[in-house]
Each structure stands twice: as C-alpha cells, then as structure tokens.
Image (cartoon, rainbow, N blue to C red; front, side):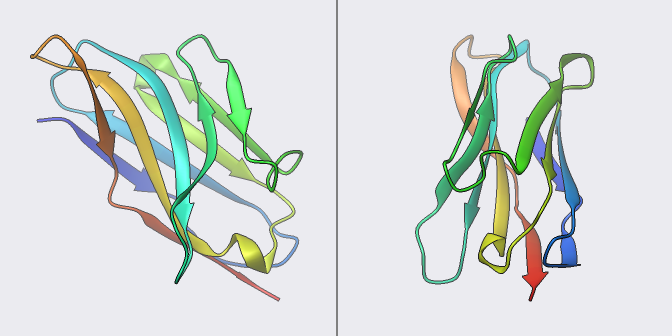
Length: 120
C-alpha cells in the first residue's frame, strides 16, 4: 500500500522559515510529478508548487521567490523550503504525488496534511 507521510510543519513568526518533507513508502515502481498544495480555513485547496521527476518546477505566484521545492528521487522524498513566511501562508499543507503502482498506471496520492501557522 502506497503512503505519503509529511513532516516539518509547525508554528513560526512572520519572516521565519520552515522546511516540509514528504516521503513515499510502500510498493511501487516510480514516481512522476510531486507537489505541495495548501488549504486555509474557509478556502479551497490551492497548488503551491510542483516538481517533475526531471526537476522542472512550477510555483503559485503568491510563493514565487520565497518557497523552493526540491526532491530526492533515491529517497522518494519531496521537500518544500519556505522562507519569508507571511501570516497568509497559514494553512494545512498537503503533499501529493503521481505514483506508478502494481496496476501499472499512474495514480494520484495525497498525504494526511501538516499544519503551518505563521504568527504576525
């Protein structure tokens, strides 16, 4: 069974930094695109950043220049380095990944979410 497990959330003051990690575990053949989304109270989930297996990246305009997504293919792990955090970055952050499993087709998986709270 494939699982995505996030870590690294927490409480930080505005201007501070946090690093999120998400590791895929279980039985699978490969991982295609990985990414991070977030959902603030009363708002829809939005894509924050994504990265392909070849390390091409994409960012939401609201985080460009502040957040950096990266991955370690050998560890099946994706990271989100968040700098210059703002109170509006407060949300539950979810990891997602396209994973090729035993069905021999890519499926989307989501982590359980990790809370990031930025105080002003």
